[in-house]
Length: 136
Ligand code: AMP
Image (cartoon, rainbow, N blue to C red; front, side, top):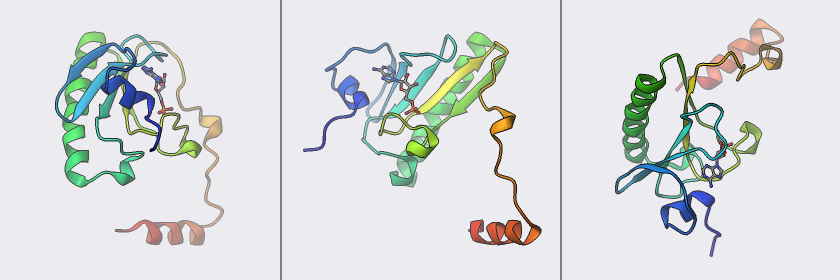
């Protein structure tokens, strides 16, 4: 049997966490290593590895909780707000169980460094081809 993710262990109360909210399909916890105070994680209970594995219904249900907590975090902390979600190792996903990060931005810390934005298109043709490939 597949080993449980850390979030499944939290859901099953095998390891402790600071739980802010729970319903049949979701759990919301404090991130153990917060980017800023108030950094929370919104997690579907079903172990989808990435959002690409999710059904539309489960994704939309999850977004309802994300929006509620985004508004709540902003109402408590003010300032800026990030809603962030990583898929696969290349995107820095550490826990292979879908989760949305929500955190306030009240300090002048950079999350995305402009010097890392190196994905420039080498030509108009390349850009056009990518646009065509991305159309749905
Ligand atoms: P990601 O890189 O998007 O997979 O982020 C995983 C997040 O889970 C990180 O921000 C961790 O600090 C957080 N995390 C890992 N283990 C725990 C835990 N036991 N309780 C709460 N948050 C955790």
